[in-house]
Image 1 (cartoon, helix red, strand yellow):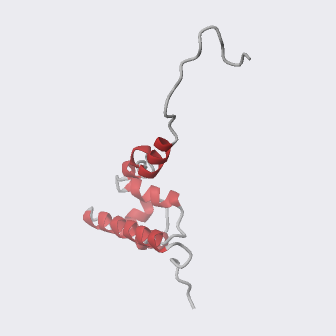
Image 2: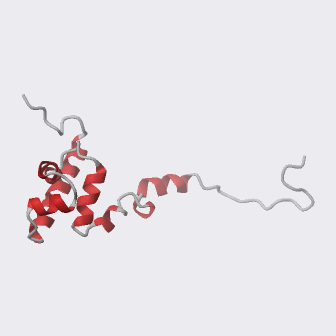
Image 3: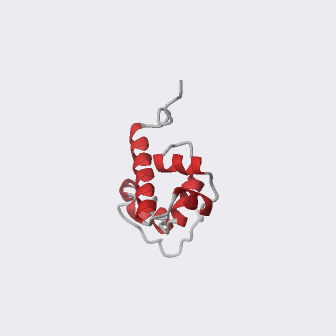
Length: 113
């Protein structure tokens, strides 16, 4: 019996990968690129490209990135974890900002007692 490749990842991760795979498949079709040609250009087998288009989690990120590059979509990959889009991280950073900043006293330097 075959094991479901999505059983080892959280459900939202599986959904996101399936969507990515379907989007890659649709992008290939819109460009009218056959599977064999895209696989050759990405230096992967047709079987691996099939797994990419299904969004299987066992395929390496490098292969996903290479396929996106071949399709001319690599620029969007660089923005996935961009700091500007990290709302939680920015909020946490804001919580740790000091409430006030004091100027050093005249005559005393840092490290002096």
